[in-house]
Image (cartoon, rainbow, N blue to C red; front, top):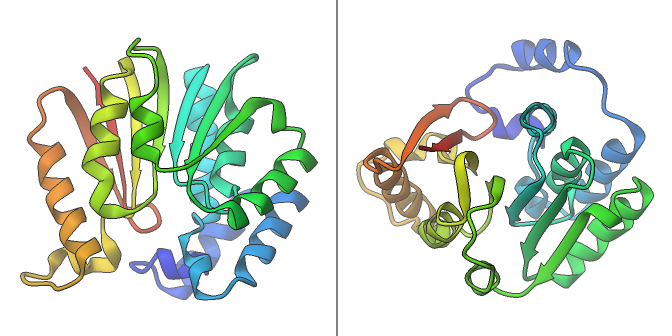
Length: 219
């Protein structure tokens, strides 16, 4: 499942990459296994190396307030919450009570439940209801692709200067190279990638991590 996201790496080099990352602990390993049992939909879970990268980044930044759009079974929320500074909080948004019930079990098990606020309902509505203060340090967007511009805009206006937004799946398994596509997700990501490239409110870098990860810094 994780390798499927790193489509640009062959099996040998990806195995080497995983072997030279610290092994996952029992909580993340068992959560990944339970998620994998859901079938094809399990591909929505982030890859292990991406999770570690996010934990390190959040910890290095001393993040106090984080937002996540797209909770799924809670793997990425764990990775973010583990990196939060003392007293830090993560607001995570999703519409699926069944998947997030799995997430809650693992947050409790990892002792993170007091750091994570789950809001069930349309993420756009949740974000629009937040105070306008620019006090968000870090955000991760990994949800329905056509709504990326909405999530991005609502978060950006609440992000502090030098705060970061991470956006997932920006390569769409190479399909961003397709000149014509009838895939709504691919078309949406191509449009989003062009949108943020021309946004002079941010600096950005697109990285070949998992299925493509764009990091945006608010100027």
